[in-house]
Structures are given as C-alpha cells and as structure tokens.
Image (cartoon, rainbow, N blue to C red):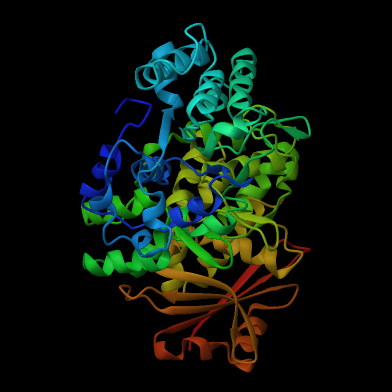
Length: 524
C-alpha cells in the first residue's frame, strides 16, 4: 500500500465515518460497464465542494487490489449489482491529486517531473524488475509493466485542472502537463495499460483551438451531465430524506439551495451546503463562504457585450441565452459574454437549462454572492434597489400606493437601459428587482396560470410567514385601476383562494411618455 499506488480505502472510510453520508456507490455500475472499452476515459467536472474527491476515494477503495473493501460496500447500492464482486479490489490503482504536487513544487513549474518521480518510486517497490532503471516517463514504466506481466491500471487524477486554474498564465507548464496527460491516456501504448481513467476537476478537458488535447475522454459536466447527472450532487429526493431524518424544514432548504437543474428535470443540491446546514441546524450560506466573491466580481466586471445587463436581469429572476460551444475550457481565453457565462456555470455560480440554452442564478445562496460582488464592484444602481426593497414591501402591506409607485419608478429609471417597459417580461424583471428581499416571506411566481389567464406576478407566502398573499398586474400606457379590474375579471385570485381575507391586489401602470408610475392596491 502506497501514497499513490494502491493507497487503500482509508479515504473512503473517512467519508463513511462522517455524520452524514449519501450513498452514491451505484455510480460504480457505470464505471464497471466501461472498463477496457473505448469509453473507459472519463472526465467529470463539477464546482468546488460538490463531492468530486469523495467519489474519487470511493473508486479507489472499490478497485484497489491491496485492500479488502467488502465491509465498506456491504449494504450499499452497488453491492446489489451483478458485477459487484467481479471487479471489487481486483486492480492496481494510481490515485494522484494534482494540487498536492503543486504544493510540493510551489506552483506548476516542475510539477510533471516531481509527480513522475514520486509515482515511479512506488512502482519500483511493487514491480522492481519490470521496467528499466533509466526509465523517466511514467507512461513508459506502465507500458513496460503491462508488457512484462500484463498488469492494467485504474488511473484516478483528482483536481486534474489545477494547473489551468491556479497557474492560468503559465503556458509553458500547461503545455508540459498536457503532454504528460497525452502520454498517459492518448498515445498508442496507453491503450494497453489503462483499465479505467477517471479525471475530476472544475473545468472540462483543455482544448487547443478547435481540437481537444484529450478528445478520447467522455466528459460529464454541469452543462452536459448525461448518465452521471444524479451523481453531480445530492438529488432532491436524497435531500428531502435527509431533512426529514434530522427533523429540519425541507421547504426552507429548497428555497435556499435548490436550482441546479441537470438532465431530464433532475434537481441537484450542493452537498456542502446541505450537510453543513444539517450539522449546524441552520439554513445559511455555507458553499459560498468557502469561495471568494473577488473572482466572481472580476468576471462580471468584464462586461462583454452587456454582461452586466444580463447579470442584473438574472438577479431579477430572468434567464439569459448563452452559447457554450466556443468556451476554451480555461480561465483566460475570454472573447465574449458567452465565455464568461459558461465559466460561471462550471464554477457553480450559474445553472444551465440545456433545453432552451439559457443560464440563470440557481438559488438564494448564490444570489447573495452576486449581490456581494456587485456591491464591491460599484453597481450602485442595483444595490440601491435591493436596499430599498424592504421599504417597498412594507409600503405595499400598508397599502401606501404613492410610496409603492415612487419606489418602483425609482428602480425602473435607475435601470432603464436594461429593464425597459417594452413588454411584460421587462415589467416583471423590474418588479422582482424592486421586491428583491420579498423572498424571505414569499415565493415569487411569474406568469402563473390562474383563473382565466396568467397572473403577471403572484407572491405566495411561505408556510412560516404571516404576510398577505399578493397578486400583481403590470400595465403600460393604461391605468392602475384597469390592472386591478383585469385581476378581478380574469379571476387571478383563484390560485391563492386558500388565503381568502388575506390577499392584496396590486395594479401598477407605467406611462411611457411621462415616465410616471401609478399604483392601486385593494384587499380582495
């Protein structure tokens, strides 16, 4: 048992000893199915703290022939599968964490040399007479071992992209590193000694121009998770079961952490946030506290092609179109707004809807990080609206029509370049931004089917809130009274009739010529 060659199952044991462990072992059924096939090259990219390293430890514990992991997997989902025993603890495993080698070299310079030397020292202990003493390349050593005794290797590289993320401007080190990866996974001899290759990181496999340097890898990303979507984080079913087990409010957690939508309507939650909220018995910002919004601030401040406008719209609950195809899978080659938005998906700051190719801010935890970044970046026009939202909400509850009209008018005029009142969607964006802090008491639903049509915005009180439900209808160049009449005529209150005697009807009209806003508020 070594540090890199067949390191054993202690890493996975540590995960199992944790207070909260969610069984993701069924993923091994997929990796077993691709062993020794053309699909045995796998790259899984996820944001920080989404469980990538735990999964790598699980694979190591399962395949490593130097240990017996039968007790660790007893009763787990994978143990029910047909090929479970056939592959358990049967292979040589090489498990390398690129960040650990970066720390040894104080950066990327010389990382390949240090890595190969450390791993080959262990290989010599295990296979002393199977490759030449003067062998310098790890790939050559593995090839000679395979040729001599037929051994194949499961190669696991955690944080594979650390060189590209942490040493983003060191082109020489990156080129050397990519050449090393190609020798392990792309050159002809490697096909004989690789049983399975499993890379984890935040970025997908690096591209050079239009061609990938490792185009034989199947990539599973936050953009295209495909068959591994349910292993990207915790599923909603898993999260609901956890909160019920620990007697905590799932609906409140859903409000704060839900939003990563992968695959066919699958909702994924950040494991870090869920686990810490249960351990601490409090909903809060746990994943974002492990990050720094300095990087987010630097990206959104680049403002390619009106990026700031899109970010403001997303903060107001909208989604924005994106073309992720041209992204170069690094953190420096930014040529358009699409590149920034795509990177933010990989970093976990945005969620991607593949059906309509649009991105959006996934949840309230991440929204707060955007607000922090905007505040420090000087986006005063957005920050002012958010600061004033509590006052606007109180004025609405008090049926103070003039204050409500003036408050929404102020938000609209400050953001007139992006939130123009040319259509109802723009009206809804202005309203959502103006009432930003309402999420503490409400779920805001835009274009909600109700009665004989679609209500513009409905404010549904959360179950712990004593605030009134609200139906808001937005008009331009008509009248606030007409908006109230439409709510009544089309029976928009039907969707919230359970709140009878505690409903406010809010009609807002905007005059495009005078720029004046008018508001009418009535009790249902």
